[in-house]
Image 1 (cartoon, helix red, strand yellow):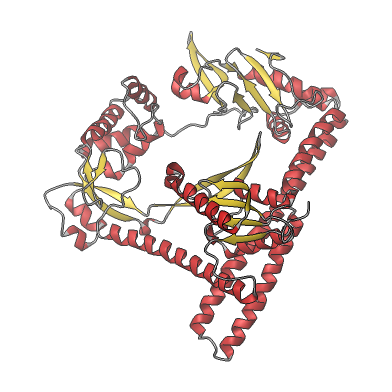
Image 2: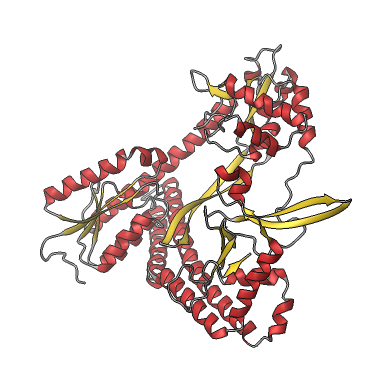
Length: 570
């Protein structure tokens, strides 16, 4: 569809984005942005084609549902301009601005922000580019100041108050330290006493839930892992004045009472890395943030004294001694559970089924029974999920394998189902034309190499100082890293598609000519691999019926590898 740019009325897409949970919850920022964009469009006589928002999405990535919608609308044609209130609403990285501008230009669409300072001339583009780099520098400087400010406060003996204070404590009036929250600390003391008395974490959980005690998050169901973290946390363990002198600075020690005991709150003990990833769903692809935590070296930790919890040190040490050997066992025990890893799913609540071994002693003999059961029901009972059915592992695995075995003996049917799945994944990967996108990033890298040479020549002619040269080369290097990261992501997507096609071909080829008898001796690990290759889900409900979905999930095609509920009943 041709663009209407320059011919007929202009049509615009209004785009707004916010990144923080507070902005999403209040909705004010999104509403304010859209209102300002509507007013601008009305003044300029621009028709509004669609209003697109991205609540809670970071500008550090282009993988956003709203931005995907904008790019699809632009690709369809008929869009004159995409409007945002600020340039950083489109993206925080200048390289992403470059990509979007080039992509939209191919469809006759311009990208505009209300705070643009330049025009379409080379000088105007240079002005906007400089503003983008300055904004990026200011954000980096602000982030670094915030990090260093928190480090300084911690070294001064001040607590960095998080959104949710440590359980049993509350912020003081200045919000730079903790005070005891007596109702919550009473619960903490009970946890230590109950652990010393030999109660398991599961038993403590049931007691608290039966008494209606809310969790630290205000929820109904307690996490058993919280009890372990609580017992091992130094914030509840009293420390003597002598111990504190070795952990904190002399300036902080000078403000403490030598006759009192204190707990220790540790700052900078853990670091977190996050990235945004896209995952498949029934309605296309959705975007989530994935976090990974890591422990920093002990020499980087900063100890901050907090008020004594009132829990005797002997009680804390006894509780730690009581749980020291309570290592969390693997759900699978010593057996390989071929339907584990998210293959079995509760059809009532959508949670994965857990693999649960149970041991019973009868007439001196030890018997082990193994089941798949809803993990939510297992943790919270019927209040969490009504599916309390236990599926005997051996029977379920045998019946599921009989069905999949039948598919493997029909290679043409299997090949057709796998082919449809691979084709859908290919369409998803190719939707944004990765070759064209890769060319844009490669052009950007070439452009940066030319800029690098120009900066070096300017420094040689003493038009800029060497300090300015280092700053500009540093900015170019950051943009280069972004471009290389995007190129790697494009390559990884294509590699994943190739691996998916290869896995499907290998699976069909491997089992196309196999004799039925050979399928009876396949080990559980190999069956598990086959299920994963087939992207298989086994849905289990409270009535004891089983539904197997393979490749296309709840598809309408009758020849897709799927089976209706009731075909596999235990």
